[in-house]
Image 1: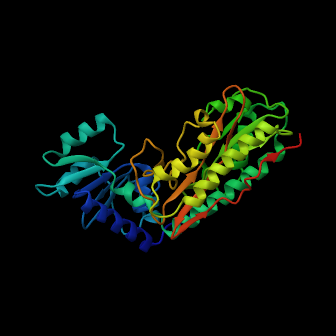
Image 2: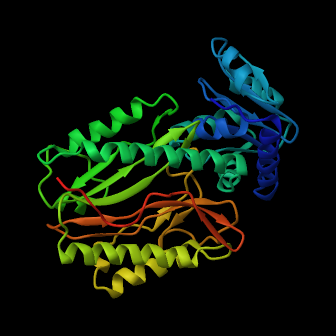
Image 3: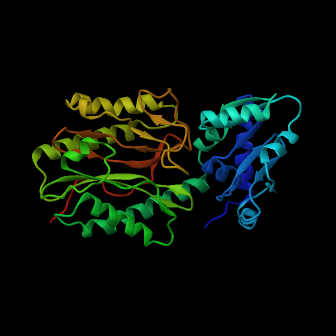
Length: 363
């Protein structure tokens, strides 16, 4: 397991503090696993991170201290019965305290009561820092995707007609579990055969694989904390002309997005260019999700959704995201293709090397 160099953590803290200034937050408290890991290097529990303009303090238990000492850099480590009491003792008479934006209602009410008279607000200061990846993070994402493709390649020869979707999912999970370099899977693999693809995040069930089925396989792994996410659609035999037509339409939509993506283009513009290809081909009804999402320490990292329903945000160098258009035909089959990219100066880098050609398995 790689521990980040002190300079990497210091740069992250500097970015977080910069966002604290712009978001008008004087202090920040986080218990979110990915955010605490990002800001301190700590990947254990219990955890509560306190960030001020001049201090970073991690509260954990005495049992976790040996690991916290190994994993953290430039962080004060403390154990105490009630970290909030200790934090309140650090706070001056006034100031705004930010907390994780995903804190539940009851927890937020508790925090406001206990930290009073200070204002407590939900804030995305760590999320904003996490949107832009360092070259160290990009290298980990690249390796995560490489290993993900190795899993996919190893699984394909084991697929047989008559297997259930759940059995194929089991093969994927067993392949991931057998690789010591992996932390695990980044989400439960999706295996959707034939008409089951209509449910875009289909939970594999007892449906049996049949000759000439189109099968969507969506899988991801975690390598040293960083997630990968890839989708390919394979045919279990010989694809029909209609299958090829739908597949080529999805591939064209993805290619149009690749051609447009660069710093300054917005998430909505990217979604639109791919959506127009599918709509003009007459399949707009069968494409109901966004074009992609941020990826990093989480499969759906905070920050960016490529969707018309999301707030419009310009792409920036260092952002990492998926590009995954799809068409799903009710009662027939579906096609989705998903790659992971990094926004670079003037364009992008594709971290996915798996071929986008329609793969026909001779079963």
